Image 1 (cartoon, one colour):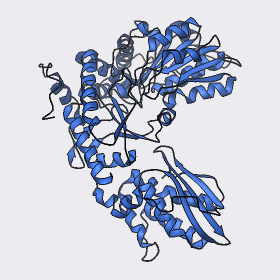
Image 2 (image 1 turned 90 degrees about the horizontal axis):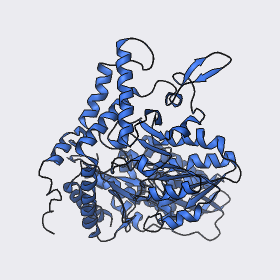
Image 3 (image 1 turned 45 degrees about the vertical axis):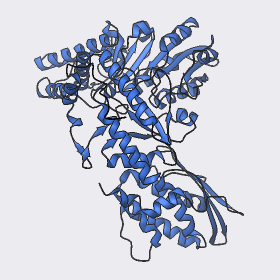
Length: 417
Length: 150
């Protein structure tokens, strides 16, 4: 191949150049080299508008929310609640009561495990997860299993990293009470057929929790269309602040759930004899929340909406194909996770070279990737490897990043191969 | 960052690619498994000890170049040593790698000098110490070890 053909040939509007310009962290040198950031599945960089929104809250509307009659408190409360409405609409609900702010996807899953599952499940009940889950969608269910006597069943993953509907069906039964699955695999990038799985689970009376941490930054998500009961994601992977996240829960389920944490803001009245809990969603938001974070996350969603998730999806898919083509020419490189439907997550191993050595040598070239088991040890082991190197894409990546990665891998081979 | 060549010295590359004593020695009577779950390095250390001496040492497992080279050189170094000397080497080496403590001439075998570059790569320190922690665990009669905390 000669010079890389621009995959953005249809993008004559300069959208991509504008996007790159909006992410300050992209424009730095690391170890003397241009930074090539290919670790957005771990955390995404923040556009300038997010950084400014967070700063603006602290510079102008710095006050606690839902209390205090003063102007700043009112402004902060307004911005926090506006953020909730915006984020709700972003994933397809107009009901602000169905959106609970949390620290991240991990906390959201723990909340559902604690407040929905623990009081309901018992001996004979079953929880179904898939074999490609992140530890955050495994361990909370093991805790529920151990405390309630329920059984935890795991849908096997194919060697290409896919979850077949028939494999899901085999694990589902009238005993299934909860199905918890990733929308997109963090280690492999596989997009799961969530809607079909929800239909099958609902037909048997089970509720479905979808871990959307790796989905919302890359594809349009609509919880009404998916039909799921719970949908969770983290703000920091969505170009927003860390320490933010969202639990979407169908209102009637949320109404019926016991509080997760207790304290201020989640109450209507407290005496030493009795406490009345607050309305939704405040009932699930004890204590002062991450106010600036929620506002920053809303700013991230504005940014994403301006670019358009359709544009982002198409751009990342083209880039993924370009990367697959480019890297497949490297002798000794094997892709881990080759599902036909996947986002821009490229997991690979290099013959005779451990992932950590790949990571260190690429870092010296200014290239940031993730190495290891990606907090999804079972699926990495299922793929027959101890660790992988993972390059993951964000909207700001382009062909030059992939070319640099391919050259970096050649350097790894020169040194260690 | 230091030069990559300081990290991947020839001795490390050689031992990383071709680890020595990669087997379970005959008459092995001490054993422990080392595991760094965050990076996936897994090293098992096997010792044949008699009275107060390590007569033979072997390893099994898989890991990065630093981890394998450290395990490989370790087996060569501890073979035939008194247990007390092996313990001293363990303390001196891990202190030197983790805390960059001053080591006087002759306190560590020259082979280990190849690992000096690891000290400049904080994320890789635990790769160099895993085998040694596993060796210590084997001598102490523990079954598992990790160097994740470094």
